[in-house]
Amino acid sequence: MKSLYLPANLRLIRAAMPNFHALNMPIHRASTLTYPSAGSFLKRHERMLDGFSYGLYGTPTGKALEAQIAAIEGGEFSILLPSGLAAVTHPMLALLKQGDHVLLADCVYGPTRDLCTSLLARYGITHTFFPADAATIEPWLTCATKLVVLESPGSYTMEIQDITAIAAQAHRKSSLVLMDNAWGFGLINCFEHGVDIVSTSLSKYASGHSDVCMGACTVRDRKLYEKLKMSFINLGTGVGADDAYLVLRGLQTLPVRLAEHAKRAHQVAKWLTTQAHVAEVYIPSLEGDKQHTRFKRYFSGGNGVISLTLNEMSQSKIERFVDSLEHFQIGASWGGTHSLIALNDISGSRTSVPWNGSAWILRLHIGLEPLDVLLEDLERAFSTLTRE
Ligand SMILES: Cc1ncc(COP(=O)(O)O)c(C=O)c1O
Image (cartoon, rainbow, N blue to C red; front, side, top):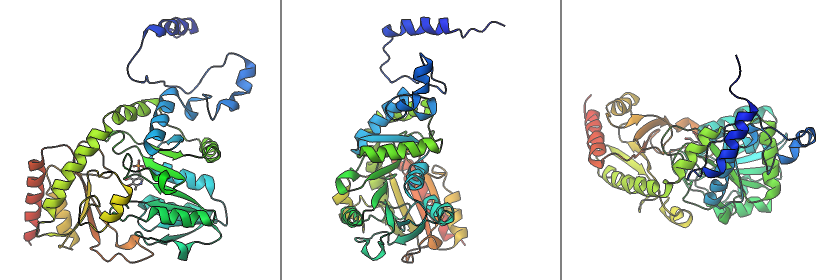
């Protein structure tokens, strides 16, 4: 059968394109890119950093997204990765070598912790966790410390490190500082506080509809960008143009969505503090929260994430509470339009200072549904806790 995909057809389509001005960035899907000559093909590596050489290493859709992420984070160069987790772990793999030491806030995302205790340990890279709300890291910095990993607010427990002070201490020992900015994307310029690498999850508010997994790593320094990009190429990491398009589309409504999620989360959090079954509510943007002073120093606004603990400690009752919710769906991550709940026993995941709150943390993401529906759902679930 004769192929319909003849190069001549492609040339005709391309010739017609100057009259086609879509408002949005088109989706440029590609693995193979073609070259006009053998010589330009042999020199394709020269295009790896700033041009296009192979679909895995960048497409126009991906580059457009990288430019937007760099602008939002306040950096110069962004690199897309297949997940927010990869945006944290890949720089660690790129920058650390045998004998190096990495310091991490004790609240870091569980899989980041796991990377240190498994793969990095196997490669002879040591690690120490420091208190999640630290104002200083001096006691744990060594001459082997090459990277300090922050996460503010921390997963589930919402501690905020004193970023400026810690970054200055790290730099005095020639260590780089990486921030896992999954929570704060669009709400903080980490570079202004001394952070060198900002890693974020685009799976959350950036894409905004719970249907994309992606992350980005952003820096200001050209040499650091080159080192990271070349290492990510070595690791064979890239993203598809369809997903990049979805994130670009999500970013168009990011500020309005974030403001609306934050407004709703405040209302729910205030209501939660009046509920007899609630032991503690964790939402740093709310006045009265333990982290609120640092929050105001570093962040321009909040989002829809709230953590809470219950007075009820038994796992079976906590599971019953979660299972009885009809509107909140049970699931990890956050940032979409639908309200979510996740539960986690964090007692075993602290190694610097033992966690002294309730072990079971519930994390809510407040979506865009009518608030009375969400409050009724929570109220009904609380009533199950009084049953034996
Ligand atoms: C703090 C933090 N970092 C990284 C990630 C990973 O993001 P992704 O789901 O895009 O891999 C998450 C996910 O929940 C997170 O909470």
